[in-house]
Image (tube, rainbow, N blue to C red; front, side, top):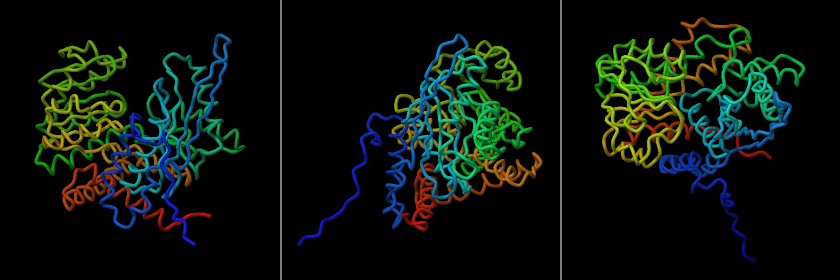
Length: 431
């Protein structure tokens, strides 16, 4: 009697890369690292399949009396190394593919800096700019109630992301706590200080981009104090990164956000530009500066380019035009795999998102730890610990890249995937 040979079930169509945008990009990135996983490669499908994906209906009463339904998501990609960790974004273009990819990138990011979290992400398909404050609160609370069955301080810890902030996290924490019957400050990070938030959290991602950028620049012989910087996105990540590079002596020559692009060869006054953006809702119209078109931004001559907006901004269509020595990915997934190849051929160093913007989740980890102990550190302590962890993580990844003669992105995935799959192998399968 012949023995039936069992094989892994084919990956469902909704997990396939074709036409799925961010998730497809992530799958291609995983495929590139498989030759370096050794015996752990037998567990590789763990990386290709989210552990859990929840789609929820979010109905709320609008101020005008209507009942409107929004669609929400929470995806837990992997929890082998600890609770899921990742932000929640409110955006009209949120999709399941995007949230799956962002959750997976969080798995890689947390493993790359070696904090004891897995990867998760959430989102609601809504334009928050179209909501009143009361409607925004109702969306947040209903969404939190719907995903409450899978989140928790030891299960999955949300945080701010695109169009969410400390106030949204306060509503999420309160809603979860009310449903649990006890205050649970550790269920989210990025909270207001008075509700268990951490000093240094607001600037952590931008500070991490700057810290890793300094380390990378040193290794390629680039003097930051003599460098020219261009920044796409001028929010919490891009704005902080621009300010820190300017304080280090760099000339920030171009900034682009949703309102437009401003350029000044002699360098932009970043504090003044931040004040202008706060008053006018964007950088457009800032003087003294020259206005460029959205497309002209990619032709700006610079040493360091920081894409800190949304994913898939650097593609095969514009990668050949970029005039930078180094790209620091402040956003999640801003560079497509084909663009990566073009940049590599042109000897442009790409410092990938999964290490460059990991400062935010690192300080989120600090916040989580502080909430459990109810003992809070000074901002100097937090910044010093952040810098140390980011520098050590980057040094290890740089060495792997040199040893294997691969890009920093592939090196980061080698380090992170080995850690994730080693944990998966040690834990085994239950039941």
